[in-house]
Image 1 (tube, rainbow, N blue to C red):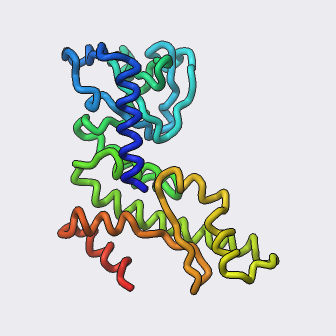
Image 2 (cartoon, rainbow, N blue to C red; image 1 turned 30 degrees about the vertical axis):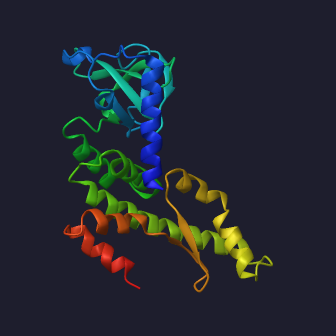
Length: 239
């Protein structure tokens, strides 16, 4: 689930570090051999996520990066028009310039707050996806309890919407068997993008519906039992 994605992300960071070698320097900050973890980032705003060959708004396009994409930040370039671009690596061989508003860095002060603002402005799957980034990669942020609650509530809403669609899809089919309905519901292609985020659903036989498995609620209670959000988690997990 979310924890497994954290481990996977760390593995990606390590692989990229080894591929690029130990010569990555944070030149823009006047440092030498800065820790690689401090240079990791994640794309959060596709409006600005054009990876370009030159650090300018009309620079040649390499590709448009999707939300959640991991990047390694290598340098910085401030433009006369006020825009700031960062030199980033997306793969072993791909380098380019990315607008500062396209991504967040766990080690950069204030980026968790900016990410939470994006989460609050978003809706549906995008809101859930952004919340997952804060939960998975900003482990020490005081805003993590809020992100966990948002993630859980959005996952519950997704379960309701998915259930409604699946019921309509199979209402005229011979799916009387509970076992068959469970298999149809949990194997539906619409669940794939949630699965990739570590969001899991279970099939409630009694109500013939999908339910969120509640991981984020349990994480709230385990890690932040005194938080305001924990009260909501207890309420939602109550039998």
